Length: 366
Image (tube, helix red, strand yellow):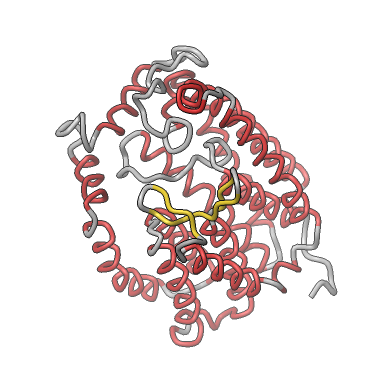
């Protein structure tokens, strides 16, 4: 699978390079006006990139069977971090949410660590259970209970988008591993009331649904962000207005360098630019799927499936939000949006995928 590994590495490297350019383009004026340093977000992003390289090389280099051995420990550490971030004085609160640890100039988001830990844990558990996963009590229920606890902690932050993302990744893995479809359906029906309360129980989420259904009803209020995204994408046309020439990033489109960076790509690089980015992610998804299909080790197969599902799903959500296909939700575009924790853990996830693509784990690793 050498050619597959090379293509994945090249695609991810190109996406990271696009991210470096677009983060500077989308954030420079904002950073200068607010922080008097047009390079502020670019420098931080490059630092996060450098921080992410050593752990990525580490997870790519060692025998991936060691992750099977320490899957429960990794999950436990992630649980502890999710609990700790909710404690006042330990967790950093911003915008009404307590999702981060604050270390000097840096923030760390433990829910990003939970994504990767949950993928590794489920891959380990499902590979051990085998056909037992078809049993509701002994196979399916214990794993869903663990998943539910993690989702509950993330919802307390609150962070509905990440909670839904982890749930989707987990159920994709469960389904492919052989879980009965009716068990998944029962779980969805059981979780539906909680989801409805989470969505409609808060004003800002209700407003997002309203803005999604009727975007032109309140153009200066609840629908302002999505309309500005439409304007950015529409202004780009076929070839864009030119790199660095966006007007929507001039304090019109909120979160231009994070949650709506795809819209700035569309404005500055046009339809050609957006389709190029979509094409790169499509190549990643196809090549990642080839790794899944070619892997002969059940643990490696499921772990790589989780990684491909995570990055593909988050890409679809980010682009879907930008074009108004789904309600607004703050998920970064993998490898391109500004965001330290997401970038580092996505790089590590790709490292795991490349590790699996090298072949079966060595004997004696466990």
